Length: 346
Image 1 (tube, rainbow, N blue to C red):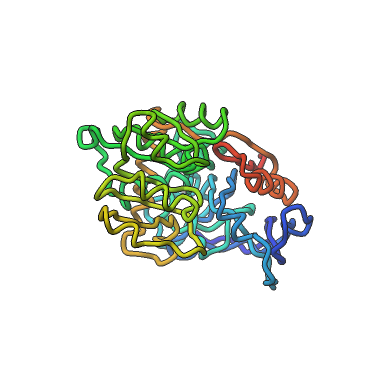
Image 2: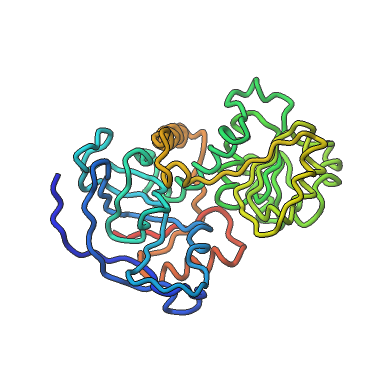
C-alpha cells in the first residue's frame, strides 16, 4: 500500500535535560514515515513509559539536529503495510515494544517491523495493551529463555524464585508468569502498598530490598532460592544475591551497572549469571527476531483467557509534551507501581 508523505505531530527532544525543564520534551512536527518492506505503519492510540525512556532522555551534553523521539511501548491500528508484510493487514489492532534502534512511538504514527508486533489482546483496551509489551517480553525472556525455567508446573515443583523490584513494570508481570509456572515466588517490596500489589500479582511472600535477603528468607522458612530475577540495582544487591542463591542456581539481571562486580563470588556455588535486554533481537535483527511476535501472541491469548492481567495503574491524556513530562516525572520518582500509560484521547 502506498502512503502519501505528510507531516505528523510528535513529542521529541533536541537537548538532554532534567524532566522539570520545559525543553526536556517538546511538541514537534516531523515527516509521517513510509513503511519499509516488512514494516507496519501504525496509528498510535496509546503508549506507556519505561525506565529506558528516562535513561535515554537523561541529562548529557549531546544536542540532536533532528528531534529524537522516545517511546517503546505502543498499541494502535495498522494504517498501511510494507510490500513484504504477511502477518497483518490495514485495520488490525496491534501492540508491540518497537526497536531502540529506530524512532520511538511518541507520535501520531509509528513504524514497526511486523516480526516484533502482535495482534492486541481482544479483551484489552488500547491503554491496557500499551502497558504490556516491553515488560512482558522482558519478563518472559528473562524467566523462560535466560534463566531456562520450565513452563510446566510439574517441572517446577519445590523450586523457588526471588524477584527483586517486584512491584515495578517488569516485576508485576514476572510475578504472574513465575506463579503460573508453578514456582514459589518471593518478591521484594519496600512499602505496604507495594507488598499488597506484589501479593495480588503472584508473590507467595514479600521481603524488603533494603535488608540482606538471606536472613529474611530464613524467617519465612527458606534457606535459599533456585532463581533470582534482578530488576533493580545489580551492584547494590550483588553480595546479598550470592548469599541467597542456591548452589548451581541461576541469576538474571536486566539492570546494567557501572560499578565492577566481583564475579568470583559466582564460582564457589557454580552460579550462572546472565543479562536480559529486550531489544537485542530487534537491534541486531537476529534470525529468531520473529520470536517476539510469537511471545506477544502467546501472552495476548493468556490475557484474553484471564491467566494474566494488565499492570496498568495510571492513564494520562493526551500524547503531548506536557503530559509526557508528567509521565516521565512519575517514573523518575521511584514510587511508581505497575505502569503509567499515555492515551491519544481519540
